[in-house]
Length: 460
Image (cartoon, rainbow, N blue to C red; front, side, top):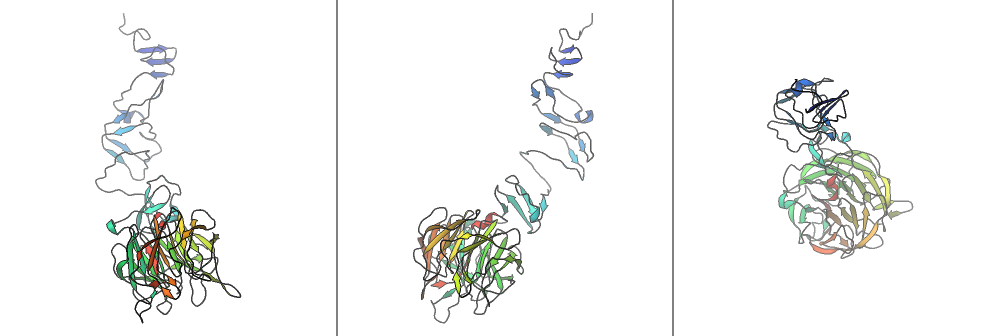
């Protein structure tokens, strides 16, 4: 009598034209109840998950032998699904592409290359944590779920959170009214400003913008109108260094920045200017044309959230006389172009100061038929008008502003005819009146300002 009788008292059952192993009621041509072990999976036509009557098989398929994956249209691994664990040597030939879902641990003993491309080739909605090399800036960057950010190449330590105030006009020492002094504060604390270094030469009504590492000072009056751009390393302190030149020499110009690009807008000499020009902060060189503002403001305020920049307020020339405008323009920092109407502040002045975190822009002080103590805020990501925030500790004009993601510090100013050294601060996420922060080293107005932690450092 045969020792094995198919379909009777055995794990192998043939029912009609369907074969069952471990089941007496096969539901397919081959129905396996349990695991399948293949000694040479690579040589048997591929690796795939095996089906059983409850769905996909959940155990691991282990490959222990050496495997070559080529770039042909077919091959031993042209289609893989499920969990694959490779314990032997794997060679991927040049030109092949291997796509995986998630890798928990990856150890590289030699080198590896991340994706690369220019700024315009970025994925607009990648997964948070996506990393690439930006060829425009020569830097690694990552996506935090909202914006692209540059990977810091150094640790700032206790220097992080610095607000810097440069140049200006003061009467502390008679006969030395235009200054080249640079002060700094730690925005998260309270206290008086400390010495940082000096600009290349005394100047006032210049602009300030920054990345997390460098601060730029552009244009101004020395007393002649200049186009000079100079920079400092914020964490280190020290005297400024020549960077390049603006496209147009001017003063009462404003600036804003992202983590990589600084943009100057507006100003005066010998007439009101609507020019926008830009620089790549990590490099050294002359500014390039960006576009034009919709108007030509003298002493507007600039701030950004890293993606969008806002130029707000200032004085503009209209017949028969000049007016203090409440109008705001927006620009997209990553793409060159003209300013577009954003909305209106609750009041129009020149000589205000401000700053931003990644959500709100702050606009404070200024002059229009008297010095102002008003503070407005705007939501940068959405078009709209300014909203009342509160009041400064004293009304004044020709102030400057420096921000972290938490606070904006408003510095100095003029209460005609006197200059002040007052430092005020507000908490950006709230609304309310400003509080005393400390004092600048001098009674001074018309300074430039920047920081290493403002709202523009989340993006392009």
